[in-house]
Length: 126
Image (cartoon, rainbow, N blue to C red; front, top):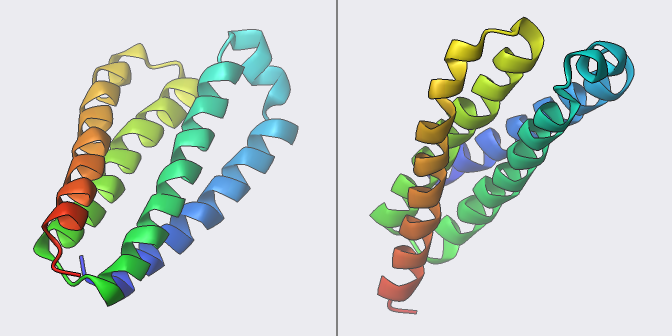
């Protein structure tokens, strides 16, 4: 992902995080509480926000430290967030427990996103 795409993806994840967080806290709170999934939903929103900020940071860093590792980190953060938080949203809203098998793959992508960010910083010449 280039700098512009990283910043755009981070901005959109933040936008969706606010919208889904508010929707969950107001319109869905009763249903999520009754199903015992409120904590899971909040975890999905929280991780979406963490990685929205991570993508924004990577986008800013791409200006100062052009690196293939930062491009990879951004892709991993985006893909990991979509799989991790996305699968938790589907689980909470549909009750389909089979989707929970996807969540750990998203978590692994997020871990690798942080690893590639660290590699980019360590390997930079600045």
